[in-house]
Length: 289
Image (tube, rainbow, N blue to C red):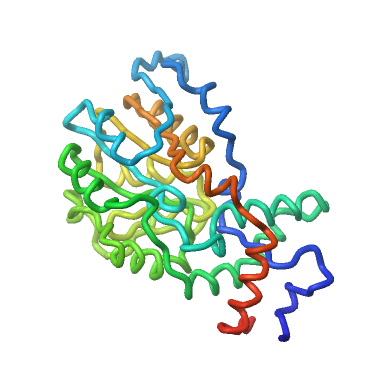
């Protein structure tokens, strides 16, 4: 089989996967999450911020419900390794993290590596299916939706993955309720004034290279909405911290829930097996750069 140029079998850069956003691999370990568990207050620009924030760890999505203590609550979900993941490790966050780490150890510039592997990343995700991280996830989300004012997804995925992501959410019955602020969006696909490509579409914010907290604030500003409480569920502590800071900037109570339901799957990642799977995948679905 003739492999793409960036997948030379003599190169240690073979089969790198990335997810467009560097933040997706720079995650903190579950052990570090305890450092954020205390309730904190922040002084911004000499103004005392009284809204509290806390970060906890959960293992089941149904645990989110116990933190929905206010009626005017915004619930936000990450997608990868929180709501959905590939059936195998091919295309997974853990595969991406392993390959990027291998490159950085060789001194390869991260941004250069990212740009080099984006085409194959998109190629893989155009062909694979995603599945829910838990049984009866759709039912659990439906219950959560009835307990909050508004619910959205906030993902680091980039624009080329918008069609596939929306299709996978629908296929797995994870469509979110109608947005009460839909009338404020002239087009189905909307972007804000941010430095990097991004998109809002049907209750999903695609951040690309933008910070998740920055994208969320742009969304809240556009719909002129200030919830009394933000509950954010993500498998990566760094993303939770970014959204926590955004909530503090607006004096909004915040609960970050570090989803640990996929931790064992991440720990069990086998690079050799996944590399073999990619070879078989490319035989079935040739890559033409």
